Amino acid sequence: MHKRGFQKRNLFMLAYIVFALLPVYWMINMSFKTNEEILASFSLFPQHFTWANYKTILTDSSWYSGYINSLIYVGINTVISITVALPAAYAFSRYSFLGDKHVFFWLLTNRMTPPAVFLLPFFQLYSTVGLMDTHLAVALAHLLFNVPLAVWIMEGFMSGIPREIDETAYVDGYSFPVFFVKIFLPLIKAGVGVAAFFCFMFSWVELLLARTLTSVNAKPIVAIMTRTVSASGMDWATLAAAGVLTIVPGAVVIWFVRNYIAKGFAMGRV
Image 1: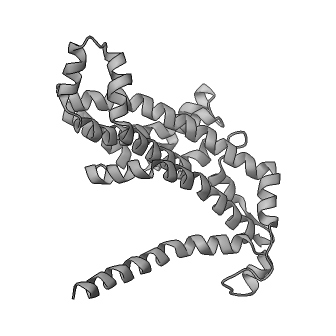
Image 2: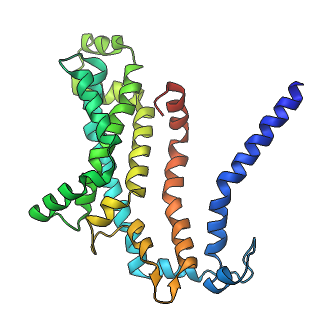
Image 3: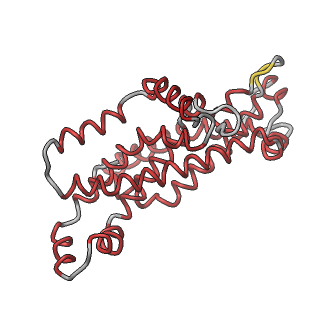
């Protein structure tokens, strides 16, 4: 009886993995085909294998510049988000002050709000101060959503650290900056890794703000991928190759923070 239940769980897990990975495999499969083959026949493997689609992306500046632009503003956003969220999360986890729960809830409501709500204010503000079509414009806009998320995640990790550690460090003569960097930060590195991962992923895949606040110089890859329609039709093969290359940065980040994410699930913050 136990063996039958184990087999059912394995079968269910296998079916889920196949269901989840099938779109990824199909995109990889399409990326090595020509548009003619994609539209002409249904095949599980490329009949006429080609690297031309990847060559187009890696040699055409209008394509590869999109990846560079995305990595720049995503990196800026992630660094600023974690830097701002660390002291805020520490304050929420260690101190009680007037309206602390209300402020914490207000932060989360920003994360719940659709980006389209803030599109017009950002557009008008950036047009006025001259930030349109810059990497900083998108990075700052994404802070509105990533900082609350980072604060919420890291506050949970910090609350799991006993307060006695803070008091012992102060008794031993540590100043707060030294204590925070040398003692406290290593204890919550898992929380920092998880928060950085989610900030990276949101900023990497977000389309509406990134597309509206940029035009040429800082155009991200998610916006460039929407311009594959021409008079001759959709360039499916190049779009598939671009999609495969878009997955790579996220997969690399997941690989480095995989253990931290598992700990986040265990602590109930992911």
